[in-house]
Length: 286
Image 1 (cartoon, rainbow, N blue to C red):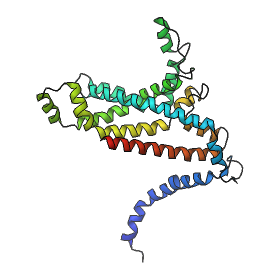
Image 2: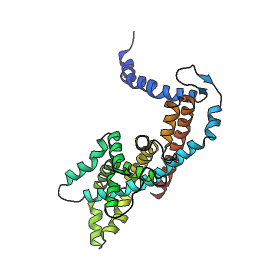
Image 3: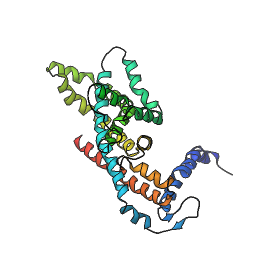
Image 4: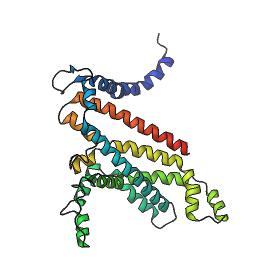
C-alpha cells in the first residue's frame, strides 16, 4: 500500500522538477553535446570532435564581438550607476510630484525594447534625426551616431541606459530608504555637508545595493542583442556586433547550430568569470 504522506511532498514538487528537467537540464546537456557536432537543424547531426572549439579560437570576428560587448559594459555600467544613483537621491527628497516622477522614470522599463530601439533609431538618424537637427540648428555639424564606428557603440550604451535606468532608480531608492536617519542627524550635529554625508554614510550603507546593480547591469549588458540588431545590424564595420548577436547569426542566419552552441558555452564561462571577479573586488572594498 502506498503511503500518501510520504509521496505527497514529491507530488507537490514534481511540476518544478519536470520544468527543470525539460527546460533547464535538458537544454544545457543538449547544448554541450551539440558543441561536438555539426548540425543545420534539417540534416542529422554529424560528430566533428573538437572542430568547433578549434574554429572558435581562430574566429577573429567573435573576439571582436566580445570586445564590443566589453566596451559597451565599460560605458554602460558606470553611466547607469551614476545616473540612477543621482536621480534616486533627488527622488528620495521631499519634492513636489515625487510619485509622478518616479513613475515617469520607470515607464521606459516596461515599454517593449523593440519600440524603444526604433524610437531612438529615429532620434539618431543622420539626416532627419532630432539630435542632428538640434546640432545643425545651433551651428554644429551632423554626427554619425550610428554610422561612425568610433561612437556607434557609445550611442547604443546611452540608449540602453535611458531604457533601463528606471529599474535601478527603484533599487537605489529602496537602498537609500534603509539607511538609518540617525546617522544623518549625527552628521548634521558635527557640521557635515551634503557631499560628506553622501560619501561617508550613504555610499557605504548602500554598498549591497550597488553590488546588486553592478551584477544585474553586467548580466543585462552581456545579453545585449535587440539594440544592435535593430539599430545597426552589427555595423558599421562590425563595430556594434555584440557577442549574443554574433551567436544568434551563427545559429539562425547560417544554421551553424553546433558552432553557435560552442560560442554560447564559451561566452557563458566569460560571463561567470567577470561576475566572480566583480564580486571579489566589491566584497574586498566592502
